[in-house]
Image (cartoon, rainbow over all chains, first blue to last red):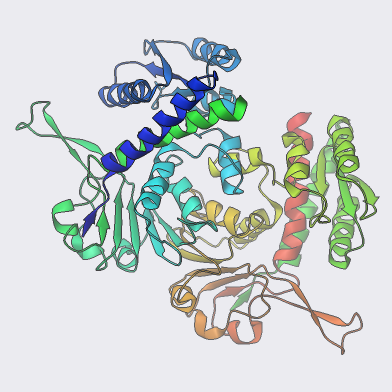
Length: 291
Length: 291
């Protein structure tokens, strides 16, 4: 069994981007600039946004963090996005989800100018991804693809079973993996809460992508020998023995599954860091496509 | 075994639309108007477009058929689309595919104003479909969903195996069937040319959707007893005994499979007529959304 080390792979991607940014500077060109909008005080959201902003600074991107109270009106937020759309200094815009319940995800996502949609959630970005056209791929599935690429895992002909059909992970990774590309060219099965006999499907899989958000749901008896296991879940589970009061758990019972599979992502340190690397790559693309 | 009769179901849908159009007339409102662009002299394309135009007239829609030589330049075609986009009389625009090789499908599809994109091929339409938002669903997958609805086939929890990953059929129907809806809520497996052991996957399926364009590819030994079989294929196979010199063959060997399954679509008379009904529904929506 080999660990798919997201820390390592993302560091290499970031090192490459850092060199590319330095090259832009030498050429007197614009440096990528990410604007991140964070609403309210959700602990996980704060952690994610801070990690993104920190990653920008590490590799020489500019970033602007806009913090708003969770009482901010939808109109006010849409106005801020409008300003960022029009600001030629800003290359990429991300609005950290989830949003407060009085604000429409759809309106906010649709308001972002597609050429700055580095989270890849705008309908135009998704439609172009489905059609196999150049676009911004959402960060988590993009990160998974980059990780498979990094470890040169040839997925052609794999039966990939995906647990979860969210717009953020399950759905886009199912599209990418079944596309005529490498990584890709998998036979893809999408499972969800209505799936019957999930275990039987998983046991047929050459690759399982777990993106349900149910801690340690995937057990060893659900995995075929030598399968590739990608764990997208990251749930805070109360744990009094930890300083922060919680432990981070993936969707896979690592202790059992890791001895059976060929490759596996740890949690944390697997898909998470790749997600950030993918966001940075998208932001770099947004900047250089334009200039 | 029961035949899923696309002629019958589409006639009912058209009758309903006809009444709705009559109601629009009574209310002094605009009647739906479809513009169809046909390039060159491909026999199948001509047949399809004529059937669409005829269906419009049957139910009281207006239609405009624009015929162009297959030597038409891309710019000329884009100019015509631009005019149709701006013409308030036109509600829906379809450009019959395939296009001559010197014209970019992507440019042409992207040129159609999304609010008139009744074929549902624009990235915005596809992206919104993936996100489960109101949009134009491409006619063939939309027609399949309408047929399942017509026969009140509850697909919840079905394992649906889809043969083919095209942007026109396989990909969108995989998204629709795995969505949280009914028809829908299927566990969906997308198969294609790189799939290993297709037969084994098909035999697990509660529903098989064959959209490969390979005549009579699906045999009885690939189908589970009492499965639902949807045949999207329609290939012209040379046949000297026919007046036209060809026979229409589906992707399913009907003579074998029909005795084993619970429901099956014939070819012709299954998915084909539903595709036209779906296009009409999209055109009606384009008209009434606007007015």
